[in-house]
Image (cartoon, rainbow, N blue to C red; front, side):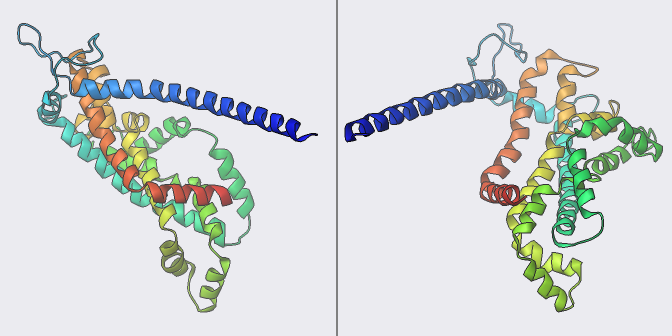
Length: 311
């Protein structure tokens, strides 16, 4: 092929590449706009502060996308109002959710990392069949076991207990954390990267597996610890199905924030005029998760990358 022909071929390939990249960026830009529109609408609705001519506050959905007036009334009402007989219900729901998420984060992170260490660094009988079974079970969504979990908890008095409704919080924590160990695959992939020589040399010095895990593996595993802690925290923080079923509709005092916000608009006493307060609650709920991801993004990416590549 002549030099001119090579130049024409290179120019054609370069043009096709630019067209392909342009089309890709155009599609991604359109998708990002589609995703952002409802988020922007919720944020604008949270700060919407409009009144009817008779002075009545407009809290329901309106036809205008951009509010005519902005204010913090929705947030003030949300934190001070009484819902379902619970004074200052939203702050209590936030504290309930925070408590459940933190406890589940601690328990689930420990279980996942412990199982991942055993699967990665210990050799024992039926190790591979157990890993295969865990992969198969991971293909099924967790809510498929919801009915069985509910009746198991009810049989031991951890849900549907009228004399001790607070026990449902313990049952919900157990539902979140009991099966967390099956999600060890990414953490195992991260531990596989760590040299086995560290474990073998520690065993020669007389260290137990727990001491090796605590003093050698964990100090070298900061990215995967943060990744797993984030995943364990965000699960209960955003979950609705298990919280709704296990805590029940009659225990408003112990609801999580997702159940509480849902009940404001679709519960036994729905009120469409609470939509702007609902939007304010959505904004407040998103703040902790967004903040955590912003500050811990580096470790999150390192943990996912190392675990996924090796795993």
